[in-house]
Length: 409
Figure 1 (cartoon, one colour):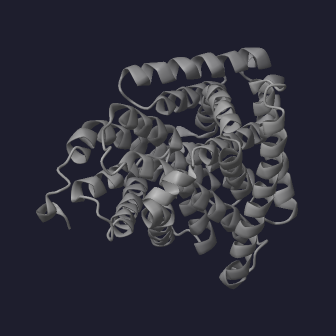
Figure 2 (cartoon, rainbow, N blue to C red; figure 1 turned 90 degrees about the vertical axis):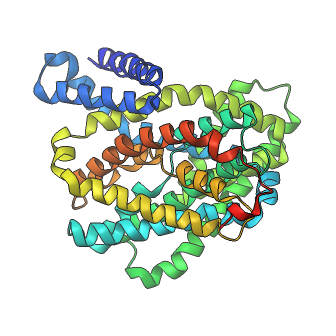
């Protein structure tokens, strides 16, 4: 029965998240864990028709839309959180932080997957795009908490990490869309990507900018006549429409969503802030659905079969990412402790991995089960590790004497 299954997903996911939050662990891990348990119950036949049959079939048919909707909410929140003042203030540092670490990790994971697990280069590249994104669900609340506490205020490191993290997700998801086309044979070789990438990003940004301009103009003029909830629904529907237009034009639909949020914040900040609050509320439910569904889809046997090699690939990717962070912050005035904090902040993974981890399996690509298992393992390993390191070392690493030039490197 569908209603019983939905209740189990929502209530169980919420309780799992609360339990893990009480244990000082990221809530998505608890939701994911509940999803794994629920999936095991369904596969084992426990619960009979209550957890299977027509209700489960309906859920499987709607799962791609639900994950797409969750991804749109993620990217909209990211776009609405990118302030031009923050980008101007941190300049090239935020720019390099947005793509250098992700690129390093993609290269490192691709090489490891090809030579360790025997993945073909297109599938290895696709998997690296899934695994490389930083988790907004873990990093954003942590950075906002540090900002409210005044930690790292001298160089405004939390704000820099916030801006760069949102852009990091855009880079990873954009490359994912291109890698998916390459893996499915829709894009022929890397040479064609030299023109596909600029076209995809450029047209996607144009579609998003035009949509954001229209929405900001329309909603600002009717600010008092349209309720906040209606504004949020309208923007969400327009974001989904922008994704469809982007797909038709073979552009990066996900870049369009982020650009839409960015333009909306720039031209109509009070509308953007109002909608952001509504999206934060929506994300409470969307987050539960996203992580529980991913947990239900993965078979724990595939995670266990990864063994030490899976851990090596995930941790190896983090090593490459950390080198990228150090390189991106090399020519800055940041203290070495602040640079180390940036490394720590870029470790957690959860949101994009949950949204995209099952896509290769849905398209029937080789190694789909292994890719999903790697995505879930990355969440289980890096999310609690990164959250704990941020909480444990934020104070000693960010409250530093910035006039001590001898401690820089």
